Amino acid sequence: MRLEHLRYLLEINKYHSISAAAQKLYLGQTTLSAIVKSMEQELGFAIFERTHNGVQKTPEGEDALTIIREIVCRFEDIQQLGTQNSGFSKPIPVITS
Image 1: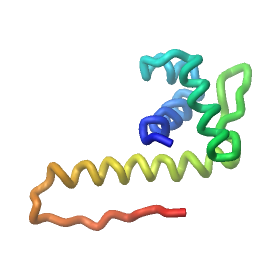
Image 2: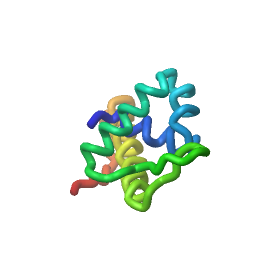
Image 3: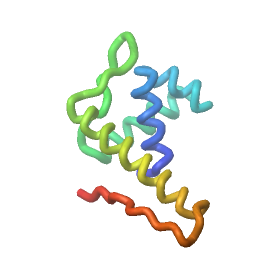
């Protein structure tokens, strides 16, 4: 699982549409759909339910997206450490399962 793919899931959730997210991410809709399907298979549950109006989060997907959002935010915090003064330290919460 790649961090980039986690960000894709957040975009899909933001737009409630794989097609709209694909357009914003400059990806093909088919490519993004395949990534979602692969991630759902890897996780063992559906993140999104496909509807005629786009996608909606499943209950498991809602929980997963909350954790994914936290992972992406924490990763960005880690990246910021390299740009901060080396004398400054900030605790970073780590999520494990």
